[in-house]
Length: 629
Ligand code: AGP
Image (cartoon, rainbow, N blue to C red; front, side, top):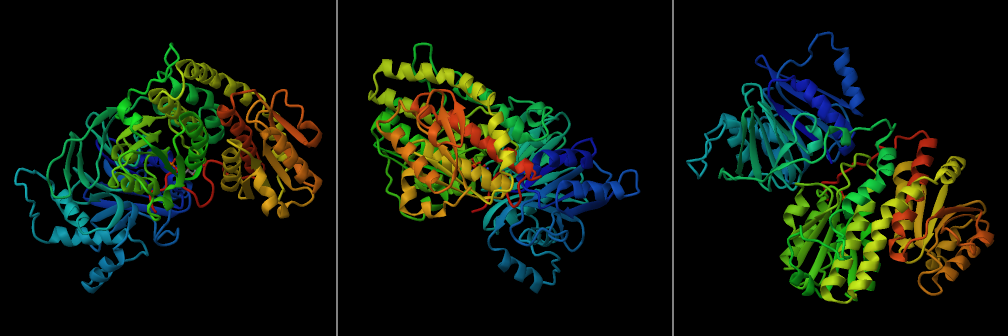
C-alpha cells in the first residue's frame, strides 16, 4: 500500500529517495516523507498530499542541500491509521530524535504497545500505528544487548534492536529504519508486506519493489517472511527474527528503467493500454510449442500433479478476480473439472472444502495483495496445491505457493490494471488448456487448433487498439453521465464487470456490471431515458442461442429509453437495429473474446476520466498494491 525506499552508498540519499518515490508513488499518495543521516544529524521532511508537495517544501528550503548525507530513506503513504496529514506522514521519530522509521502495513497490536510506551513516559506525536516502532527501538537501544541465541550471528546493534522489536509486533509490516549515529547502515524488516534488496556497486537499496532502484542496479535479492536485513555499502546481512543468518535468492531484473517510465505518453495508463499486444505476446512466448502443445515447464508442479486434480478454486481480488471468472468458463468447458472462483477476501472465512487434490489458482499482478496471500496460506494449510499467476518476480504470493506461472507484462504503474489483466487472462487460458492436455480430455489436434488461434491474439489486440477512436469520442460525449451500466453474457459478463470497475475507479462514476439475462430480475428498474448501457455481445458463432438472447436483452433496455453502446464482432449485423452505437472488434474464438472486448471498455473509462480532468494513474483513495486486509 505504501512505497518504501532505503539507501546507503556514496550518492545523495535525498536524490535517490526522491527518484525512488517518484517511481513508487503509485503505491500510495496520501503523503510522503524522507529522512537522511549525515554530518552527525538526522534530518526529516514530510508533507501531506502527493509527492509534489514534498518536492515543493524541499525546493523552498534556502540551503543549497537541505538534507545532506548518503544514508537515508523515503516513504509514500496510503493512509490506514490516522488521516493523511503532515503529522501522520512518515518518517516517524523517537523521543531522542535519533531514530527514524518508515512502515508499510498495519501493526495490529499498536494500541497496547502505545499505552505501554506512554506509561513509560514516551510522547507520541501522531495517530499512526507506525510511531510505536521508533519508540520501541529507542527503548531497545537503551537497554540490554541482543540476547541472540546464535553466537555466530554478527549483527549491527540497530538490526539486533529491530529484531527484538519485530518479535513483539503483530500484523503486517515492512519497516525501514535509519539512526543518526549509524550512517553506515540502513536496516529493514518484513512480515506479510513486500521488501526487496538492490545490490549495487558500493551501494545497497531496500525498497517495496525493484522499480525504485532499477535505474541504479538490476541485481536484486528477495527478503523472506519474518526476516531482518542490514544493508551496508558493501552488501547485506539477512537474518530471521531470532538472529539466525539466512541465504536468500538473488536474481537479475530483466527489464530496465525505461520500462518504468512514461515513454512519451502523458499517463502510464495510456502507455500500458498500448503495450497490450506485447504484454500478451510475452506472456504466451515459449509456452506454445511449434507442434501445437502447451508447454508449462517453468512452474514447479508435475504433469502428474495436474492429472491428480479433481477440483479447481480460483482466488483473486478486483481485476484479477475478473480474470479468474473468465478462467472458470474456459477450465470447466475444456477440462470438465468443477471450478469455483472466489474473492480472496472472503475465501478463508467460509470454510471452503479443499484437499490435496484441489488445485487453487491465486491470481495477482503484484504478488503482494494480502487478501490473496492469506487465501493462499489457508489453501496450503488445507493441503491444496497452489499455483500462482503473477506479474512480479520475487514477490510474496509466488514464494508462498507451490508453483508459479509468471505473466511477462513488464511493470504496470497505472493504478488501474490493464495490460496485466490481459496477461492474467492469457495465463489462465494456458493453464486451462494445459490441464485439458495432460488429462487427455482434449485431443491433441483440438489443443493445437487453440494454440494456433492463441498465437494470433496479439495481432488481433493490436488491430483492436487501432480502431478505438469512436469509443473515445463517445466517452467525451458522455462526460456528464451520472451512471453507466455494463451488460454481458458468458465470458462477456466478467468483461462487463471489469468495464464497470474501470469506470468506477478512474472516473468516480456509478457503474455496475450485470449478466444481461439477470437484468429482468431487478436491475432493469435502473434503466431510465438516456442511461448509457454498454453491452458486450458474444459471437453469433458461439454458444447456441446466446447471441439471440443478448440481442433481446439489448431491445429490452432500449425499449425503456437506454442509450445502447454495443461491442460486437465484425460482421454481426443482427445488433445494428437496436444499437445507438456499435463498436467493432475482430472475430475471435468465444473463449478468447475477452482479450479484445475488454479493450474498448478500458479506453472508454480512461477517456471519460481524462475528459473529467482526473488523474488516471493515481485515482483518489486507491493504491496499486493492497497489502492490508
Ligand atoms: C484494478 O484496476 C485494481 N488495480 C485492483 O482491483 C487490483 O486488480 C486488485 O487490487 C488486485 O491486485 P493484484 O492483482 O496486485 O493482486
